[in-house]
Image 1: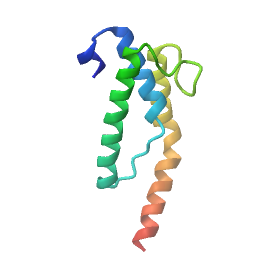
Image 2: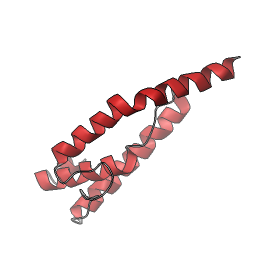
Image 3: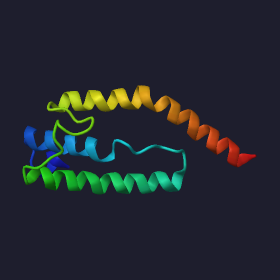
Image 4: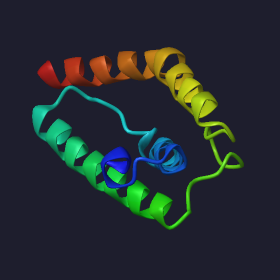
Length: 101
């Protein structure tokens, strides 16, 4: 969205940083209806992040997993998703299995 609206690297970087700061805690729980809601939430958050970036505002490198460099912010998000979420995945499966009993 930021690329379509403005196309500047700075705007795109700020929008990405804000998105990482905003929806990085969202989890997939394998439920199709709630997944559709999460897509809607993410699209709204993306537009909000673009509007913030156009106003020269973003989540900064002083907050949460967002770094001062957008590439490092992306790497931080990848580390969170690939390592820390393993226990979350097991817990979600356990909850879903207990509902099937």
